Amino acid sequence: MQQFIVPQFIDVEDKIIGPVTVRQFIIILAGFLIIAISYKIFSFSLFVIFSLFTLSVTCVFAFLKINGRPFHYFILNLFQTFKRSKLRVWSAGSWLQADNYGIEESHFIPVATAVLNKHYTTSRLAELSLIVDTKGAYQGGEEEGGASEIKNMKREIN
Image (cartoon, rainbow, N blue to C red; front, top):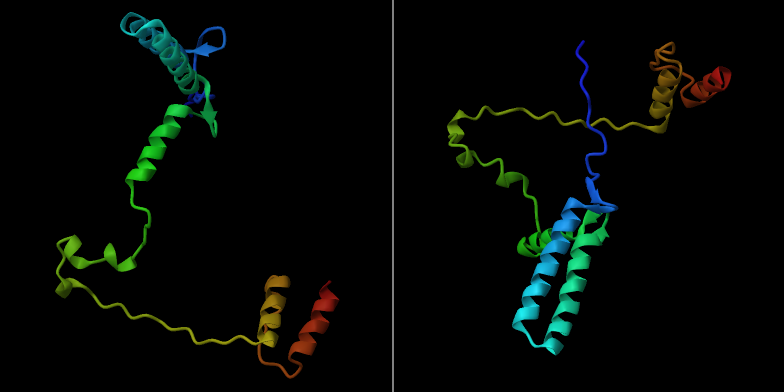
């Protein structure tokens, strides 16, 4: 039989500089690039405010994990949740309609449904329990003793 190597720890990212992963390094690099561009565009006071905001957003996206997943996955899932409808109702007939698949109703074969009207009493349940407990040694049946006889047999078994 052929043996295959199964990858383990597939959710662990490769580290490039100390504890910083490739994804984190690229996010931090993009953040510092935005800060460098803002240094050329804005005045110093506006640059400081904008760079603090950019640095905090960059650190959140690079290092914060929610439920063990990176923050940008959380943001994407949040947008998908808002985009979907609020209430989802499943209807059995909606996906079983014949016109959805191009099948005419005349080609359907009627299927008879069996209706079970059995009503088990406690003595019948006790008898079934005894059959299961004895692994089929007790075959059951209609006997005079009923439930009391079954309870006696259970005591003998245990």
